[in-house]
Length: 291
Image (tube, rainbow, N blue to C red; front, side, top):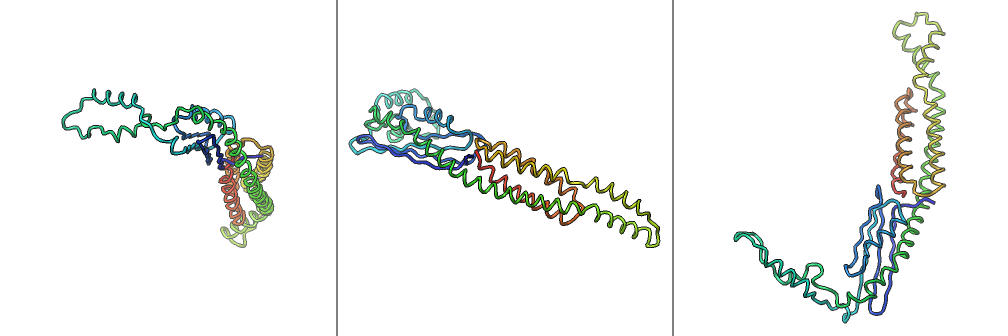
């Protein structure tokens, strides 16, 4: 099955007086872009989350956040005096010009610096490591959500491909009528130019019309569009990370539709080529959600 790059997952856990919640949100992305937000006292939360994500997903912008709640007795903040003393010592060495537009450091400002104010039990082994055990469950849930969205996405893509194929069949029918219409137009144009009484050999008209028909023959373009539809369906049924390949295939769809429109010598075929481009754009928009 194909997977969408859109999904959401949440996993909650607790141990003693500590509870936590992991949340992961995934949206479209050209490559795999991971952003992790977690309390600093959780051991290597960002690194371990990134390492696990790479094994699960190939594309998408994924945001992961870990929040931790503790009872009042546990969560009372403590001041890390070693860090605070070091900051004060370093600040005392900074020499600023008399007119410098910077106010002297205040205690309330120093307490907001990361590492100065710590949760009372942040050095507890449980709070530093227990939340990490839920990373696999979080990513399993996110992967499942992306697959479920991928199933719905595959149905939409198949419906659009059916529309494209129907338009191609209509275009083939119109293309068969082009040579005769071009012959009539050529004969009418010549007649208007040199007069009704001119004796125009029928063979000459057929020869010129045939030459023009070769220039506007769209059989090859229509055959390629049919082949592209079959290839797209095969890719979707095979599953996996096919997003980039679908994106390239959309370019090929567009190339053939553009050529079809430029070769068209009939207004109905031109309008049908525009309908094809609209359907292809809808397919490309949906395909951008595929991993």
